[in-house]
Image 1 (cartoon, helix red, strand yellow):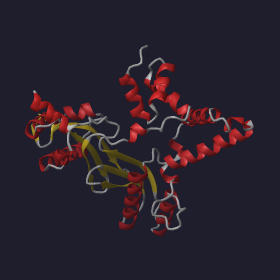
Image 2: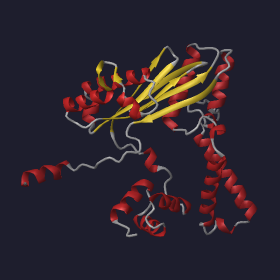
Image 3: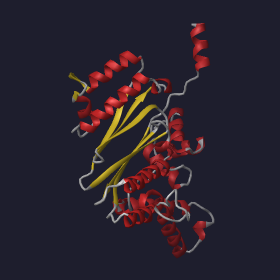
Amino acid sequence: MAITAAMVKELREMTGAGMMDCKKALTETNGDMDAAVEFLRKNGQAKAEKKAGRIAAEGLCKVVVKDDKTAAVVEVNSETDFVAKNEEFQKFVAAVADQALATSAADIDAFLAESWNADSSKTVKDALVEKVAVIGENLTIRRFAKVEAANGCVVSYTHGGGRIGVIVEAETNVVNDAVKEALTNVAMQVAALYPKYVSGDEISADYVEHEKEILKAQIMNDPKESQKPEKVIEGMIQGRIKKELKEICLVDQVYVKAEDGKQTVGQYIAQVGKENNADLKVVKFVRFETGEGIEKKEEDFAAEVAAQMNA
């Protein structure tokens, strides 16, 4: 398969690896993008999941909560940040969030097809199309999530005026201001440090084995580390995987407000539970970040104006 410059550019943006490394990876994997990413990771040349964390599109995330029991978060995208700051757009995003709070839809297609709460003669998609016509810019209702607490409560946190929206669900027999404040602090932790799981119990054995393979490949590709005894290498892998899992599991992360700089989120929650005679446990979180994983079109306005003047 012919490796094009566009393919090399895409892989470079996904991984942060060098141009020649990307070309070699694509050549070795016959143009398979996923396999090329894997190739670069194993050779220690990829910045893991750079693409997944990159902020690329404009718009807003909006979170709404009802009676501490139900919460919804939506992401609505626009082409420019000018529109994201527009009052008309912000009102529409708020209406979409209210729609999500009441929805029974299982996916975004069903959500777009359901009756628009503000006008039952329209669907959500109809309302979106009308708003595109009014604002004059392409808009997208990208995703939504709804969380309902059966045996506890939900709290929310919004960062950067809507750049990040977080919901945290907890099981608890006590719901008071102290408990809700603690959970809001945890939501801030989720926004800041982007965990993937609540705890290690959620991580599959396949994921752990896969990451171990990646780590072993990285070690074997290192001239110095690869010469160490097999038992030492195995210990290195175990140590690194343990560190990685702590970084991606919420309750194992060091709490950002820890006074001693050591207390984990799990220990903080246990402390708050004890102080309030509450059986308190974080069971779920949802984190939306505006434009996460979307490729942003690079604009050169000076060149665009010059081109129009010369047309």
